[in-house]
Image (cartoon, rainbow, N blue to C red):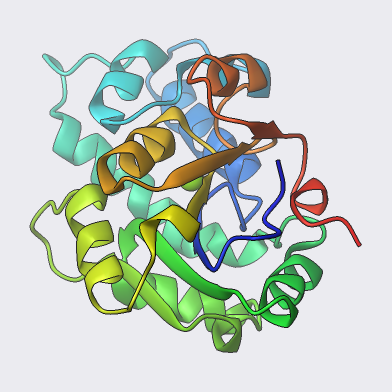
Length: 213
Ligand SMILES: [Mg+2]
């Protein structure tokens, strides 16, 4: 399964285009250590990471009866914003985006991260101009990726049968199903290949495999 033949490619950002699982792991391990809780390795992280993230925090060992989830999430986000500049794009991202364009396809981003943060990160990575449109969370209210995806599709003349969502989590597959578009999941992000395969969606080993030269 490759991106060839798709007219509209909806990219997830964290873990899919941006290689940031390692820094999320370092941050969460720091938070666990400061509370004298056991840390985890990347394999374990990819087994437990999930949406909604509160479930993942619980599996990581945090106790919401001692400390509210919101405070933990704020601590994580503060550290993440300070460190996201350390993260690079996954291999072959720029070439793959260019190949989609050359084949007549359009690239867009759909992300659960803050819209302004997303804009800044894409500019910092030097790939903002590769995207016709980007959609992140516009305000402090929790808006689902499904609702944002409908808004994104609604702004463009999209033939859903020729659109595909590329993500790194089982949630991305669920979003694609709700939007009635195909999905392709990429390993090397925030969840294990086995979990991605459990969705039944095609799983690519890397970004490079999505659009071979
Ligand atoms: Mg992701």
